[in-house]
Image (cartoon, rainbow, N blue to C red; front, side):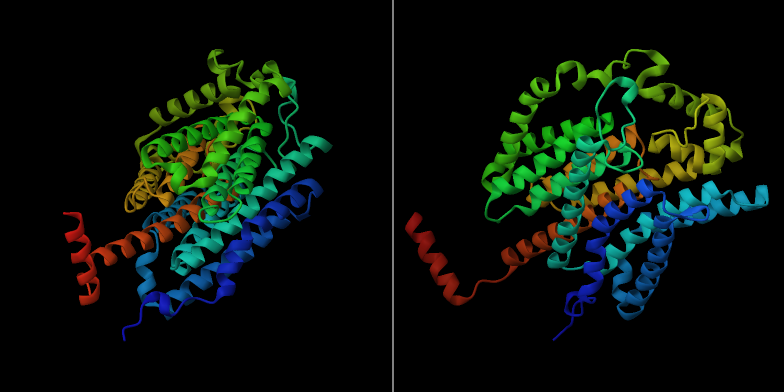
Length: 442
């Protein structure tokens, strides 16, 4: 009997460790930020993530050596991104003689979620393993939503006090990097309700995550939320979704009730106060219009070598600080970030990243249950990539890649099982029954 990849799975504790990371990150991130836990110039969270990065890198090598067939599961965009980071570091070293600590921190954050993506792709080969990862993501998202609500009640971080908005981001450093988690987590919670009892409970938890997204008052999260709900409504009409996905009915009903109640409970003036600068030219989007203009001009006027290979993360931050006059670390847009940091090489990688996920999702029907969830999460990423930038947000990018990897494993597994079922020859007994059924319908 031939052995397959799934006959020799990796130890269960490896998958469990991956599944625990979203919850652990949620807790440690807030403790580090709230209590200022630092070891010299680096935070405790950075130290722990460095250790995890090394451990998972070793795990990837060990798994591939033990199961060489797993090498084909390594996502090429992740490898390409790691090579790009090495190129950027080498260029900075050659041209400047040293590497800025700011660049090392940013590239390390990106390398962390890339290694987690490769790890999940290599070790997660069975639907049961993928489901465990999804439960880990759902747990971390619900805990994140809870921290937002607790912060709202007890005075969590609020970066929008100047807009006279009572918002909350829990004790995270910024709301911009958790709204992607909340929208992605809500989608995962909904997906996990398939075939379960009490679908209303899953719908309620998903709405809880979505409402917490609104309470952060981060606009990119609101846009992503609206588009994801619009996609789920479209999918419901196109794929008879309420029949396949019972909790979706509860979710959309509760979401509609929350949308109607929000202006009454919060007040229209507070609810839409952060959108008042949309028509204010360069001040639109908390200055994003000005930042994007500076980034575009800086790229188009740069020398050809800089356009091709970029200027690096620290040089991008210095440029924005010099031209914009505020401590802005990046452009709040993934495409512009990649153009400034990596030039044509960086932009080429970003396009390959988006195309790769588009192809993966299309490999199993977008109108399937897994496809609906995957498209929703992909839309969530694209919205945040456009309006706030996500590539340097370790927590959010971890959610996107782990969720999409898990859904791909389940979706492709179900697609393959369906093909085998229809392609398999009928046994004589089944053929006899089928012929009788055919004769009875004539």
